[in-house]
Amino acid sequence: MVGGALGTTLKAMAWAQLHWIILNRHITGKDACGMLFVGFGCETDPNPQRVWEVSLPDTPKPPIQPPTLPEPGSLLMRVLHLADTHFDPFYKPGSNAECDDVFYWRREESGPPERPEAAAGTWGDYRFCDAPKWLLQEMYSHIANTHRYLDIDFIVWTGDLIPHNLWNTTREGNLDVTRQAIQMVKDSFPGIPVFPAIGNHESHPVNAFPQPYIENEFDISWLYDEISALWATWLPADVAASVTYSAFYSTLIKPGLRILSINTNYCYSFNWWLLFDDVDPAAELAWMAQELQRAEDAGEKAYVVSHHPPGHRDCSKTWSHQYNRIVHR
Image (tube, rainbow, N blue to C red; front, top):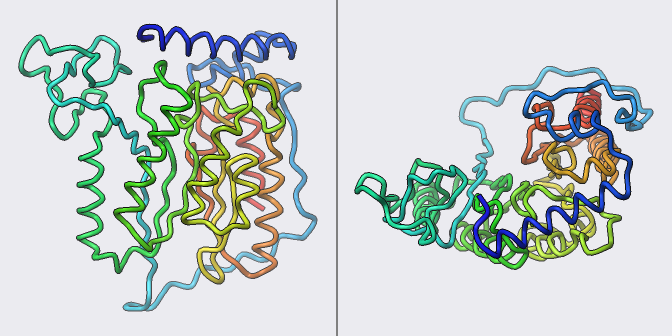
């Protein structure tokens, strides 16, 4: 799975992070199983040392009102949802698509196919490949032309822009792919608001999202600073601080309708930084509760978007439970 010197360097960086975490936090087998390997069926909950709670606003929950259905023919909002675009800038048609490792990529490095049927297709391939640039460009062009730019009110883009070359990434490479992927959407949908969320593949090493107070060589600001600058095309200036801090934000879509973009890498069980500190990383859930209270006070509805679904087996149980408490309230 690891290819050449680049993969060896990345492996060393991943190990350096894990080594630092182990040295700076007493990790038990219950921690490792219940935090990192839940997706593989290894569960040790309840672990009282990993249970915490977010304070909710004191305002009582107002009576639930049944939604008012729109009249036929009334104005509707149309939303385009993009997810997991996984753009591979080095995709090569005709390369070997039948690699032993499903996470290997369809590039020149995968070698020539041993039989004609093993060749990767021009427009991508169902055999664990990621999307070539021309596929995404044609897809966006088809959407834009079909809808003539007029009936897409806004776009929600829920992350994972980076291809699945998991152990051959670099910071510079991930940022370059992110820039290219965002430019494609900007070029294809000019003037249409886009509300992004961050995915787990955007980081280097993959899945590694340190807490914002980690300011050593593993500091994540290299990523958050860049996406804050890139997302500024679509988002107002007043969200830059929270995006730069930890890649989440709240902003109005239009009067009466707000969107909260949540960084769910702080619940993702494959983010080994949760072993170090999983207690509401970046105080994100406390922030979310306050933002929803402000929206309620202002008579606003809210969309909450993210990459990972809270409550999934790959999302920390305590984090998911606290998220559910907030949404239920």
